[in-house]
Image (tube, rainbow, N blue to C red; front, side):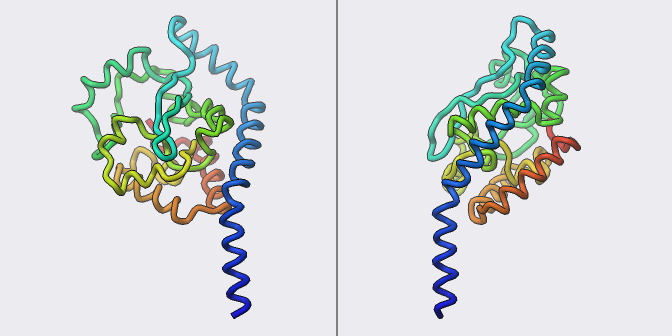
Amino acid sequence: MESMKTVVKSTKKATKRYPIVKRGIDVLGASVGLLLLTPLFLILTAIIKLSDVSAPVVFKQERIGKNGTRFMMYKFRTMVPNAEAKLEELLQFNEVEGAMFKMKQDPRITKVGRFLRKTSIDELPQLVNVLKGEMSLVGPRPPLEREVAEYSVRDYRRLSITPGCTGLWQVSGRNDVSFAEMVNLDLEYIQKVSFSLDMHILIRTVRVILVPNSAY
């Protein structure tokens, strides 16, 4: 009986400690990442700028975070400048069911952007979001407001924790995974959240970047 009490007490202590340690890992990981990736950022800035001098290098888009909090998420620009305006006419070609838009041959994506998306390099500026506390290294992807408007009560559970740069969805097939499967993976992560699971996802994310998956 005493042994069982010790296990329960230890588990509760680890659970309380997790958010604090996770935040520390986020800050350290994002800081080191931004420092080491500075040369790559400079090269990508030059390449993206040369492809369209008048367009911004970094794309900012409002996303929905933990408990419905709005924030501006950063990405390297992979689409034409007026991509959002063109979305309405492309919605009929959506290739996934549910509150998400995906199109393999999206005409809005630039040549440089297609490579950046394939390797997930376009997501790297989100390390700034991690430093600001708006995102974590690991967690559910932050959705758009128009996507959240279509959420069911179950889907809303994705917003119960801080969104992440990577997660179970990204390392489990990404664009080959349906919206319903993505929600299932996110809820599985939320239920099983732990340091070991976070590390497992981060390691698999590195492999996905080095050996591009189904991202488009």
